[in-house]
Amino acid sequence: MPITQTRIVRIVVEGAVQGVGYRVFVSREAGRLQLDGWVRNRRDGSVETLVAGPSAVVEQFLIAARRGPRTAAVASHRIEEADEAALREGGGEHGFVVAGED
Image 1 (tube, rainbow, N blue to C red):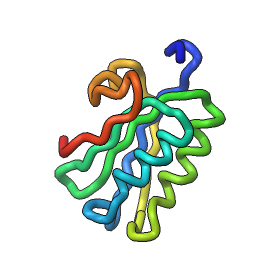
Image 2: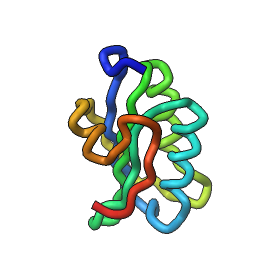
Image 3: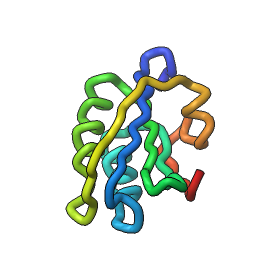
Image 4: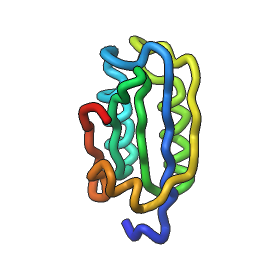
């Protein structure tokens, strides 16, 4: 997908989101929606996800990411627009990558 037609968004969720399948959940959602990007645990216990794709599809993803899997308890989230450099940072410019920790 041409990067000029994409919306790139970072979402950071906090709560009981590590060790409960959250990264696998968002990876499946991103794959189902054919989004590029990456997800990783952060040292502070939060999970950071970056996705890129058509705006309407990214919005669908964000709805799921704010909820998370049934095994997670998302207490809060923050969403911000991101850029191509952030997409490349996690190696997610061609597909979706599940990374370790930042």
